Length: 224
Image (cartoon, rainbow, N blue to C red; front, side, top):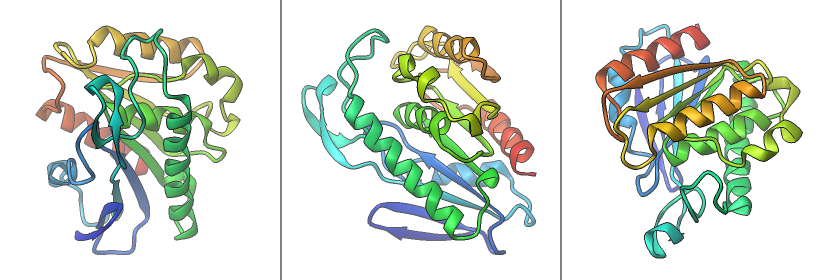
């Protein structure tokens, strides 16, 4: 794969013309380079000509971290699921994801061949965006994350993605986003009629080898 870097993203371009795209969002304080080293562990075959897009979040003050500026998809006001959320910021992040999807469609990748993935805060963004995107997507991979703005999903859900494949994975000992928050998010999605695959692992706020195997299997299934 060929690595291409620009001011706002890292792209891994397959050797053959791309037939699918994965848009992968990093977590709070990281950047688009964070998950690039994981891609070889997926053990892609040459015929799996998938383009990986790893955008960088903007640098902004984060309230939960005392206003310290770091890369963040939106401001985090609270990690309490009933607490106040940065609605405007989440919608801006959604618009960024929508634009990335639109770019791939314009480049010749059908929406059904575009998969969203995200870790932690990035996972919250891709869950939010995927449920609202107006064209069918291949799936959404939500790692160590939660469902933001849950009270709006029933009114804002896109009919095109009512049947989207969702895989959520979470660490049993996650000290940042507790397992209970992930389970609650899964159950909230199930209550709204979404099909959700769920895996939990004996790990903290991280990605494990067993989890990578499940990621690879999900991607192969959705982008075969």
